[in-house]
Length: 75
Image (cartoon, rainbow, N blue to C red; front, side, top):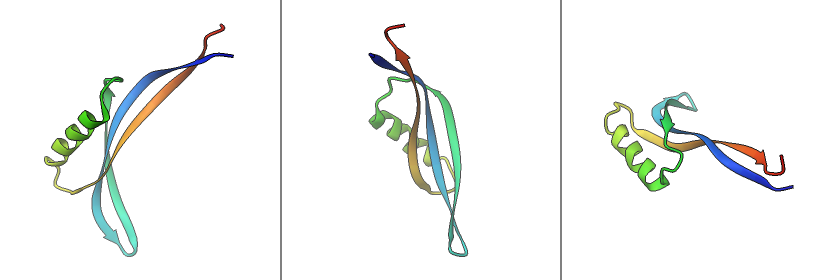
């Protein structure tokens, strides 16, 4: 069986550091959708850093979220 993967959806997720609540780290996130599926990770990270500069909270983590469809080529 030959299976092909097709990038269906890419999103950029910014996780922002709110601080500590007792011993627990509190994180707020902002997710941007409709990112081009062929974007390079370096470019996506540069955009994330630029957007983080517009936020009042410091950037904690940057995530690239991908949905990939698996298609059976034999069908």
